[in-house]
Length: 249
Length: 232
Image 1 (cartoon, each protein chain N blue to C red):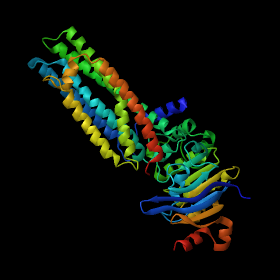
Image 2 (image 1 turned 60 degrees about the vertical axis):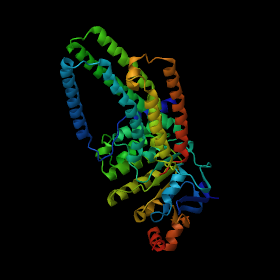
Image 3 (image 1 turned 180 degrees about the vertical axis):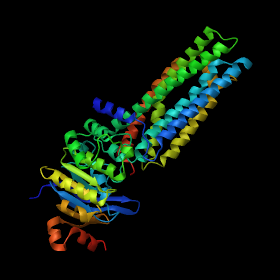
Image 4 (image 1 turned 120 degrees about the vertical axis):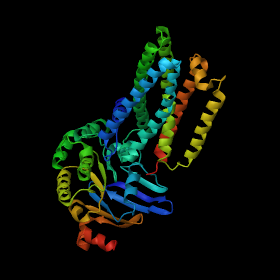
């Protein structure tokens, strides 16, 4: 079963689009926009390092985009099977539904981690560049910047499973006869973020900033991560059942 | 006594107010090529989806190879879904590798032989194939499995008339030395006539006629003529 699982993961790691999608054009424009974005960011920070007082670690706030990106990626991975007309092949593979979706989420997780590492390297280079340019730049400042980034990258990676499984909820429910429950999910999702922002706010800096300024490796963080893993697994089991019994074709 | 491979007892499936299968009672004989025939919306694809466990019955019972449809049973069933596509990033060769790794009882040698009969180049990418070529690849993926039951939902859709004849000849040739039951739907009754040993005509989710194709031909001239009479 392990070899089947791994073969499924390898199969799901491939990026897929439908026949009408112009992959070459998409790739070309993605590269163009990425290069322009990187040039823009470096340009702004080059100017900024001479005229503003830059708190380097704030650059890592960018990482908060990643959990949402991960969530969307999980939805897309499932949606692709239905959009591309391959769901019939996928759902009639003679393996437990849990194996099928676990393989999809594992493939997603591998891709997300690759992206996180890529972003980490890019931001580290940017941080090093600013440290080098800035009059108050020092090696200690740069090392501290990398340490903060490394810690938060690892924490974001540890929350990848829960974001993937929440994406899976949307991806599966939308194709099932339980679709009306999606409204309930979005309501909970909205309430969670309200709670997260309102109750997480500390001092005058806001939740994210206070998080970055304190040591994140605390008992609450570890407990939250472990709870999120257990919750992810329970969601996986539940969605495997939905995929088996309530899928609407 | 005829051995059955599929048995439906009062099988009922509703979508909203519409019956897709309406108290369907049916016994499908083993080792033949069976055509499930009828107009659009008579329940052919729904029946197939129930057989492979993609859809659940509201009432009644179906047994396939002696068991109720379930995921594990699909190891012994090759299923070509209706309106399906194959993975666009793969070549024919990669598709066969996928078959070897993930489709139980997939025979790569047979797949290569069948691909050759289907005029499929092993290095051709699915994204550059025509609809007809993609249909041939999907048919090859199903026909290359050593399983007792092959279910083909509209296997000739998107394939031109000349190629269809060629494919049907290949299938007849393929069937000649194998113990397999093929269950298929097709709107191309005229061309598939020679392939079918047994025909089941459905209407509004239940059986209109089910008999040996030879008996039906003797009585009505051809399955094509019978179909025209039934659905006039």
